[in-house]
Amino acid sequence: MGAGWRDIAGQMALSLGAGVGFVLCSFAATMAAYGALYGLRALLVAPSPLDGAIASALGFAIGGSLVTRAFLRAEGLTSLADVGLGWDARGNRMMWSGYALGFLAAGLLAAGLVATGSVRIHVSDSGAPALRDLLFWMAFFVAQSFSEEIMTRGYLLQRLARVFKGWGAIVLTSAIFAAGHMANDGATALSTLNTFLSGIGLGLALWRSGSLWLAVGVHAGWNTMQTLCGAVLSGHAVRISRFEMAAVKPDFWSGGAYGPEASVLATFLLLAAIPALFLIPEKRGRLAAATVRVRN
Image (cartoon, rainbow, N blue to C red; front, side, top):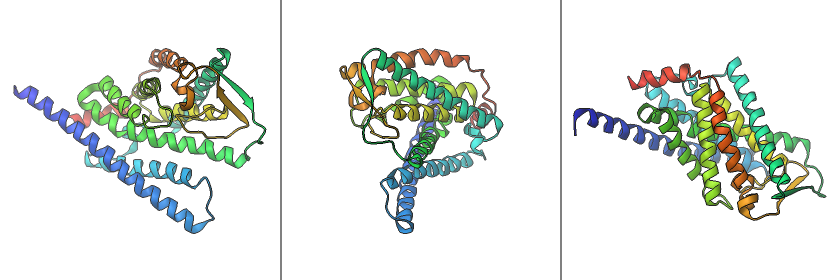
């Protein structure tokens, strides 16, 4: 093996090792933050059914952010903007534009499932959830999407891109993202494929725009709209409206216990959306500069 190949192999091993270390450290930090927040809330206020969700969202967001900053600083980078999380006018615009796109896409999926007779949506007789619960869950989905994005398409994607280039890093992180959902209730081969495809789309949104906020927004809007329609979300039943979605056709068409994300219609929607993301003007800016700076 020549020196050039040895150098490439060494860089690949370093990137994979850094990626594994990042995932393990993120998991440890988020579990610690989760435990601390859950315990603190139990000490300060009366227990609530939402305690677990609150601690989970905040714990993962805080833990992921702290570990990302630590790994960036270890490589001579100083800001979350180096992974596409600069919060300025453009970041704000990317976030809410993404939210609207994700919201619309999930609405199209729900409408398509109803139109094809795969599911039906009816109004529950149990009454509407309180407004504060609705607002809580909307905020929760933003925090939850932020935590998942920063841990799979933040530092990790950037580090892998230094060796495997953009598409290689997107594929690898999408595989990790899909694997993380395989243990969810009702998961199927089709749900795993669709989660992988959604990871490709979210990674491409980041790589084209240079803003992780765009991916966060799409992710949050998608999750919010699905639950507003009464759908099961990735195997989790979260009720935030009076609507309830029930499967009519077999799992292949309706998504079954996993929800619409496991339906073949979701596959077609994702396959159509991925090429459309190339319409995003390529503007990686600081994202690309950080990748090149560390690689050199």
